[in-house]
Image (cartoon, one colour):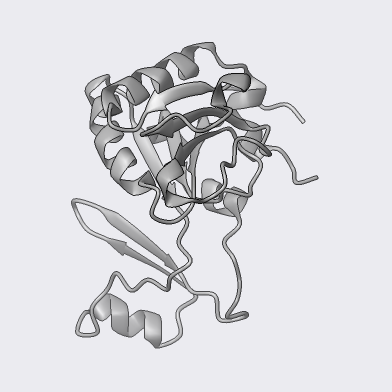
Length: 193
């Protein structure tokens, strides 16, 4: 399956175990991408239930009245809520989530989490946490952002990024946007095997 690069947005994941610093790194990288003029979308996977609304607000009341979808629109932002009443253990589907974004307003989508999905990724890894490195078994990881070089890293063909140098990580992403193949940029849109 081939896609035209003008119909979809390049997708780059940030994968790692909980507590590795994915959100902190992204929070520092995004301003550098924005300063370069890029329009950045972010898709974050969470294993926790979220409640971004207050019980006293109309949107909360309407959601809990039984709405399956609710779009809260203001002059500053829109928030789209999808309620899944059919299954309590339903995991989000990456492709379905990507389809909900307005790609005409984005230059790149950064994905936090979805570490087991097939998409091009930067691994966020801290060897001191004692968690296994993902890059050893995930062929879609192209770089590792870490604070200390992991054992046996030199034998790998991955780029090493300093987790404490967000500007360098942003520079890597900008270079990737210019040089990566369409297959690498749009890997997340390919059908599941």
